[in-house]
Length: 523
Image (tube, rainbow, N blue to C red; front, side, top):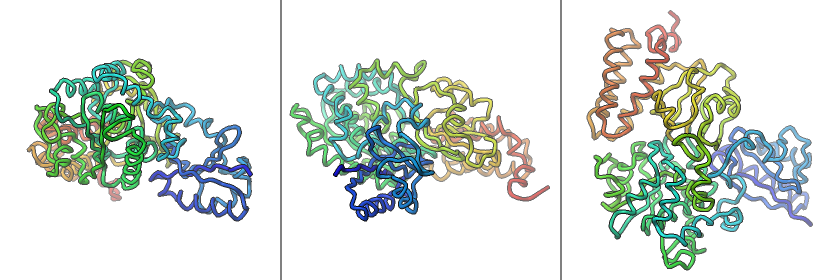
């Protein structure tokens, strides 16, 4: 009897939508029919509007069905699920031919949804650990030079050249050095880091190990968002298996070189996404922003030279070391090289992960991939780069996703989160939310951020209540400039961006009349 392989995702999104029960019902249906079925809990493909998306191995490739509810399993089986037949309303055809997936350029996410996340055999069968093997045969400077050639820039928001950061740590005198991964993914509408950790954890392990070899660090830490328990469990088990297989530990694949890695849970504070605040928390102290200089690359964790990058930055490195820096740099535009993981969220019909070379427009992402708003109403604004990113009006949706192109009009690409809003949104309330978010999440170390955000909420409330609106608008403008110029870190320095964008592009939403109508009071 031929074994039938069925794939049911195990990531947080799919599980929250009933994937565990779907897997159980498929197993029960197979047992009832005495069919030899192997259920593999793979990672998600990132097509969230289709989750749980079930796939069946066939001679022609994997065939997909979704979104599959537990209640739909029996009808799917009756319609020929185990034979890969397409006589069901949930049938999607060959997975690789789904337009949303087929049009992407997946370098970092080439394996997600294909493999069992914890299977080292699955990982190595798809070029996993090839980058590490290449790095083991080269010296640190050679590895750093390859990363420089790729043009890779930090995917956490600052977009600082990764190779330059690594070079700084490499140039420091020999001694204890550290590799720290910022996995405290806290921006609204972002989930790419989580998908790497839950769906392809060895990719992060490999990237961090290569970084250790590059700069002479033998120890690394993954600072993980505490709200990601599934990622924590998967990473811990993946690290254990990697050590057992020789891909981590004191003797990497018999090379005599070592790298050890562990996961530390974050403190549940948004500010700990800032690298120096993260280091303070990792050392066991309250997450307060440090003054710079000195840079963490020189005086970092426990006052030692430290590479701090986010998940997507490390996850890009194995491809670079396997295929070469130029192969990565061949994608993208201008100084923005390689691919960007865009995460479509908010009021969107087809939300999910999209990996494309830099240069795609927001309009293409939101319309061709996202399919417009879920509500079916006209799109009014889009926020890119997390809760501190500007709200962009329609006039800016044709701009290419590129660090410099966005900076030219005051936008930020950030971590690639794209949150969509239809025409029912109250942009004045969104401006207030930005200031209120800062009052809650500020570490409180510097005055412009600590006090400015509180005053910002008060001033916006006065404007929307009609109290000296013109004078208070001027005051709000001055307050935003003070926060941008005087804050110690990006928390206070970027909080004004969404507020300023509302003042510039959606000024009517700050008027008292609009506030009353939005609140349900006709006037």
